[in-house]
Length: 343
Ligand SMILES: O=C(O)CCC(=O)C(=O)O
Ligand SMILES: [Fe+2]
Image (cartoon, rainbow, N blue to C red):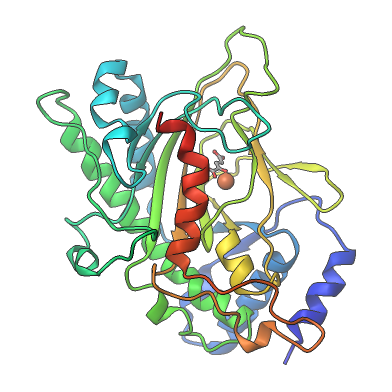
């Protein structure tokens, strides 16, 4: 069996200058050798870049086209309609965030994007809402949806969001067995830890500068790592996303048709005792074209303690972090970032 800790140390010497593209066709192959071969490719990407594109991912293009169309329509609405679902009306980071209201990197002044956040919805996952939630942990709660009486497109918008969420959740569930195999764990390792996932999706809109001067302290989104297990990101055709390698160089995540970008988040880095890497990334301000993207942050169940599995610990590499539950960890990180929006 591959020694993960040794492999991880060897990879520290190497670096990446592009983001690998991985074909997911074999993820559901009946032949376990094919699934294992795919998991090895995923392992290399998770240890090295922490970022990879996936193609043949199973999410229909029509669902993606529809959500981008709805995203354009929503962000085009007048501010007073968008503010009916303002994040300040939510106790759980759901709803609309206006331009510059989040600040992902505290060195900056604010992020030049607008956002709409949603999570598991009681309409689709009623069972998750019966879970008891502890104080200071992330909660499942209602999403904020615009009202039909304020906007006639409200119901179409909601349905497009729910359908996209359902499809990308399915893609996420396809990735967990591969990550488990990549970590030398049983393929179903994550199954009982992702029954009520803290999966948060965001519609993002980066308005073009259109002649306004670039302000370095107001990027599209400041340099950061993501918090959850992994992020599944769909971007449109406008570039701007960059990923930092260990030398500190920024590598462009070039928009690539009908692919998603998957990147490892801090929760999984912590859980794997730094074997998988959560890589810093940012979005530059968009100069002449508006940019739209949709990150989907897949965190495991709130009550799961992030105890590194034994394949990620050796005598030379003892556990590096205190054990926290996944919910407490993400809640802590989200509270820091969204402090700005709750004024
Ligand atoms: O818009 C993008 O391409 C990236 C967004 C991102 O990194 C985030 O929301 O965490
Ligand atoms: Fe991110």
